[in-house]
Image (cartoon, rainbow, N blue to C red; front, side):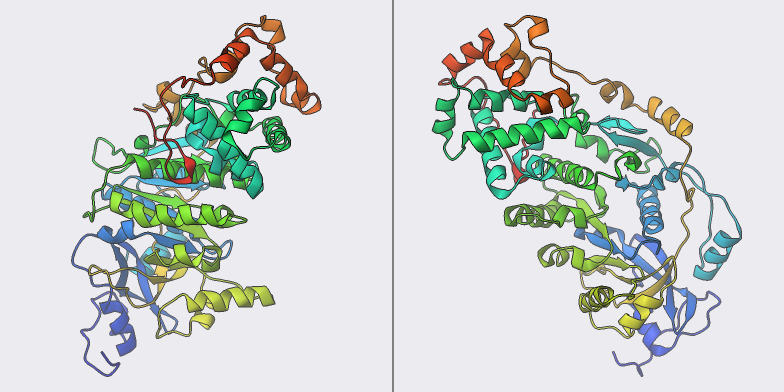
Amino acid sequence: MSDSETVPPAAPGGAGALPAPAQKIASGYAFTGPALDLGALLWDGRCHAGAPVRVPLAVLNRHGLVAGATGTGKTKTLQLIAEQLSAQGVPVFLADIKGDLSGIARPGQENDRVRGRSGEVGQEWTPAGFPAEFLALGGLGHGIPVRATVTSFGPVLLAKVLRLNQTQEQSLGLIFHYADTKGLELIDLKDLRAVVAFLTSDEGKAELRNIGGLSTATAGVILRSLTAFEAQGMADFFGEPEFDTADLLRTAADGRGIVSVLELPSLQDRPLLFSTFLMWLLADLFHDLPEVGDVDKPRLVFFFDEAHLLFDDASKAFLESITQTVRLIRSKGVGVFFVTQTPKDVPGEVLGQLGNRVQHALRAFTPDDQKALTATVRTFPKSAYDLEELLTGLGTGEAVVTVLGETGAPTPVAATRLRAPESLMGPVDAAELDRAVRGSSLHGRYAQAVDRESAYERLSAARPPEAVRTPKPTEAARDEPSLVEQVVGSGMFRSLARSVGTQLGREITRSLFGTARRRR
């Protein structure tokens, strides 16, 4: 359609008739089915309330990207989308890195700024809170503890957390393979350390040769990396009860989707850890959920914040697993939105699968900024806007949007002034968070850690309690052989060494990223 062709005028909204190019853009968002309202069209410096910018509910499992420089409004965009998904019965997962998203459970507060924004975009703003669960990795912070067993987490993700190189990652994979084939489920980090100690002992070296490619020196590096990891207070993330990702798929009694908020302020300085744990959650969902094909609305929308951390220094195999997960999880009804600063943070193989884009402002203060800006513009379809100029001039709470329409075709690029969230735009206090956690139906299932008998206890069972005391991480870092001596000196260890030729339990099977399939 050319700019001179007749296009129906925009719906009433106080903005008057749109110029033909803007009318053409607006018509691309005139959906007939259920949709989320993002905001109103910006054209030539004016906000046109009668030209809403929307995204169809049915395409949100086609994934998306929310990007922009720090302070441009990405967090509020997540809150806005999460509210509307919840209202339409879709569960949501959010990673709350700065602690700003806990307010989604409380009604917002009307003020001049909210009234001004809602009037500009034609929004009938009503304060509302939404059903929310608050989670915390390993129980660090305010939330239901989220733990994973070492067996479930798998060697690929653990190697990334431990910052192992490719050779060490492959060796860790062989250690897991040995434990898997023997049916040795590794519950926590001391279980894995005990198995590594066994494989590096005189009795276990034959097993080391049998699994091939694993040197005693490399196994020692892995053992020291595990000890250092524990010394940083990371052991609490691994153990039982393991979090069941099916709990992310729940709806409230009134039919609204539950918003699961993973509280991460206490882990801001450990971004690699939480980004890798997010990938574990996603991988667990992937291999647990059945195929559903195209659906009227997603079963879950998962927001992956600080996404660039996942891709930094990632191996080729790791990137291939991410790409495969994103490509295939769509058919299981899960939409994934990556949240980061620029599209170039996301590899092209993944970016090409993200059908819905909300791009906030970018800065161009340095040559590197300018390169990032130019690269971002190239990722958008041809547009009626000068995107380089537009992206550097957007205000807070404004974005460039393109989504998949109801037919699956991309919509025109639309500069958009976004709606105001209806829930509280800020954190709730710690006491209120704690009350919400204690009142949760999940609290009784996950609050208390359980340390049942597993590899470490079995290997240490025959020695007196004072001899098998688990060294404090700082002690272990100074005196690594003590653990080995404790383990290999036990009668249970010698029994295991005699029985390694037989399978001790059901072999563990693994999926993407080497994560273990959940035993239900």
